[in-house]
Length: 54
Figure 1 (tube, one colour):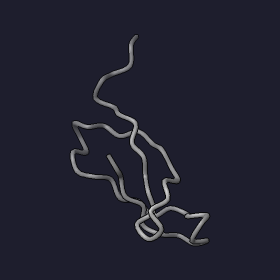
Figure 2 (spheres, helix red, strand yellow; figure 1 turned 30 degrees about the horizontal axis):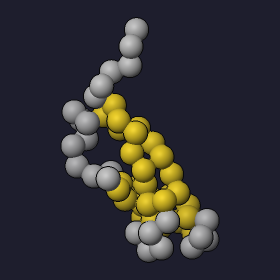
Figure 3 (tube, one colour; figure 1 turned 90 degrees about the vertical axis):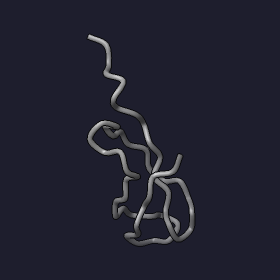
C-alpha cells in the first residue's frame, strides 16, 4: 500500500540559534499549524523550543 499524501516531512529549527536540528513527520490534515516542540539543541546545550520551518 502506498504512503498517504497527508503526512509530510518537516524540519525543526531552534528558536534561539536558528540551527536546523531535527526532522519529523506530521499529518497536514490534523495539524495545520506550525509544529512547536521542546527538544535538545546541541549548539545551545540545553532544551529549547524548536519550531517548524518551511
